[in-house]
Length: 104
Length: 169
Image (cartoon, rainbow over all chains, first blue to last red; front, top):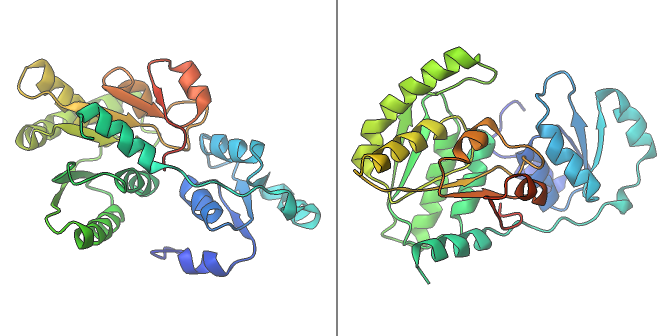
């Protein structure tokens, strides 16, 4: 399973995703509307990854825990409390750049 | 690299063909981004037949957790390496989102601007991962970019010259 090109298929068929806090993993999962538990690796990270996971958790989109509390989380979690994740809006970026360059 | 590539391709997804040709600059050590880029450009060519792009590689300017002193040296080397590339391409716009690779490219463009050889607009979009703090690339390029875009309101507060458009990837 090491480095598949795309996890899209696996994500599509999953009922629950448990992932590290990498932005790509989190966002891809949330965009497919799958419930997500983010596991923080305290030892590995310079912990800026933590910022996104914490924010997503604050906003109610993901659950999060660390390696040692995962089992407990799986036993006590309430997935229905998670909010649906609105997609990002690259069109806003395109509009912004168009204004910068005077394209309309 | 990885996440940065995915983010930048999303940023590109809504751009019109006014933003063409696209020149991608990758770190020489980056194995996976090339495939993602080609796939993106291939799809794009289905809609915009005259679409053009190119790929260049430069030495990676800094490894994760590389020491300050050695980073300064390798970054300087990368800037020197980037200069002929930036001079050749003379981009109107440089769009980047944080990997170490982007710093020398932007600084080389900034230098060419100072020397009145080519004025390039430098747009930096900080990664969506950065909610409360800027990446090192961001901290540097906050001062060298023409537009510095952040995706979370806390950063807009801390860096008032930045632009906040919400989540754009």
